[in-house]
View 1 (cartoon, rainbow, N blue to C red):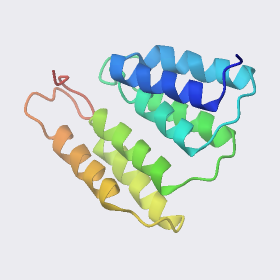
View 2 (spheres, one colour):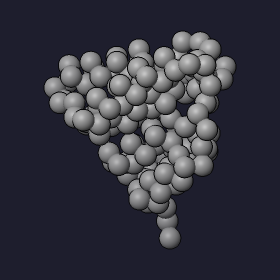
View 3 (cartoon, rainbow, N blue to C red):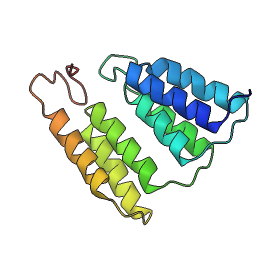
Length: 143
């Protein structure tokens, strides 16, 4: 049958587990071309798949921002779950400043942070300070 919202969500989850960020970016474009309806769960899966990229490698540092802009272009109303995914993604990228920026943006929009929000924010702070981090927002990848 024709691909639908859930089938793309499954593919994004597969990309996340296989660390296939570039494939997730391609699936997002394919999904838009097929005019597949998008929802919160799909966007969260997409952001988490993009979070698996090597953001400390030159050329990948803007990938998360580009993924977020694509969601904003769809004019999706942000939710706590989506912000949690974004903050988690920046924690994976070891960018605590961006994670904190989205934390405060979330609060400014009247969305109430939950335990997952604070967990991801603390993870961002911890990962950025990890021994072996070579540059701000980057460093060694955990096994």
